Image (tube, rainbow, N blue to C red; front, side, top):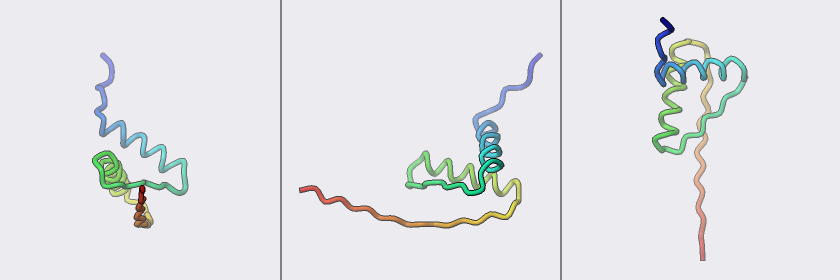
Length: 68
């Protein structure tokens, strides 16, 4: 018998472990949509679980395009 299959959450947490281990700075772009909201929450879950010091910077950028 093989290993139990991992769910999407477990696989995402494994990928985040690799990303946060390999890179010094991680940027998560949050548009307010479903996908970016899920990614942001996955990152927050991962960071709260590993309990390492983290630094968050929030940048708001508004863009307006006038078409005539």
